[in-house]
Length: 255
Image (cartoon, rainbow, N blue to C red; front, side, top):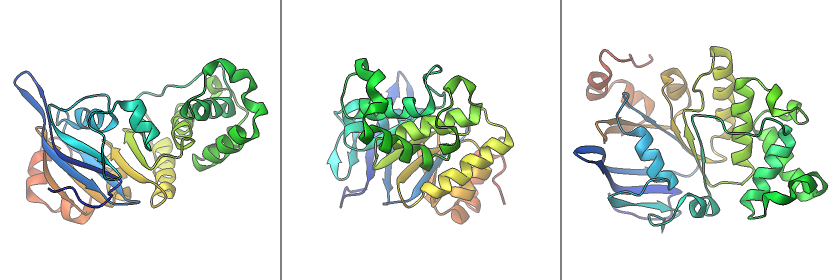
């Protein structure tokens, strides 16, 4: 796959080895502007390794990552974040004693490169507060703005983590199992929330919840043994014989 244009996120032949294990096997992806592109695959397929390379936490052994046409392979996570790439994690990381507003304002301050030491004056800065409130609303948590994080339910903490990502005004959002550990009702809320973000952000979603993936995704890529074996629209993936074989005995694809 050649690199062309200014796709929000693109990879070219990413390879990552751990000894004799090929964790990512010449993975090439291209995300379109405003789409939600899902990565699915059995456990051990290489999804976590791939998203680590996209986010800048892992350096590939070969291949490249491009943001808006710029090669960022040599850049770490912080520099990629400054260029518009944001990542959420499987495990929520927030500040239990802070309020929702304080957490999101602090995330914006950190994104802008300012010291954590001045956090007590955060809410006196109207620009920070306005940005934080906007992100909180986008994450569907505006009814909990003044609530302490320690009082939030698990699903609400994941919404808060998303608000802390959105406040940095990212161009590309990497979502690493945002529904992990959630019950059915909380998962439905997250599906509804992500649906509202489609088109406004370019989203790459790694998720085990197949119902959510097939409900949300514009494009689905399937990883098996470190390689992308299929990529296409949900309907194409659902009826792909190779994909069905890969999931046989693991999980049936939703109809």
